[in-house]
Length: 227
Image (cartoon, rainbow, N blue to C red; front, side, top):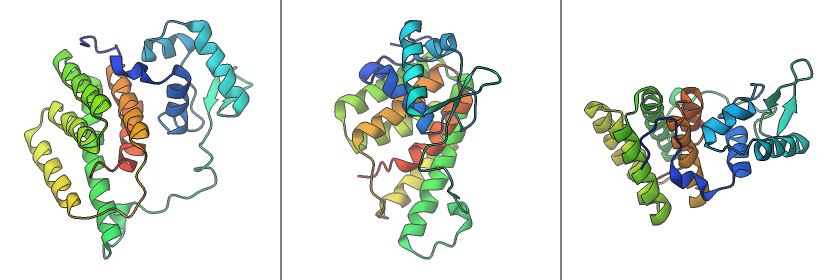
């Protein structure tokens, strides 16, 4: 069990460090143009003390163009994912009319994720060892259960652990309304959805509030947990 707020969950080791680090970069957890943490700080975040291995992964991502080198500072910076470069996200789903079923699904999803982001930011700053143990257990069940239901249970545990009964009731209501609407969008693979939540919990445990919130914004909204 994890009792240290700076220790990532044990289940995070199911993917290699290179996969996980690239996931943080390409998902926008570190925004395009932002300076990456130092090698030692990356070791703290990912609970990996192989500094030479971390540097080797960074060198590889730099060679692939996933990272850029700031020639003035000598530091590595994140590059925007190819899908995001040169694109305009347009207005928020909450700013659109909701005449179609697709619009309603998007609006419900955005409302749900806004609530999750608030809970994640709270947990990044104030999660107790008990909170982390419960979240670690819920994520472990998602990994072993490998189902949309177990992923949904982890998301609900995030709200529950934020410690606000009203937020939990609102979240349950949003999920109930969302279950009546069928999303027309393709759903990411279960492995991608588990990786997204694994890194979200890693960021919470490492008290990386901004990264955790960006994961909730950019990853959870694409992971439809309705069966």
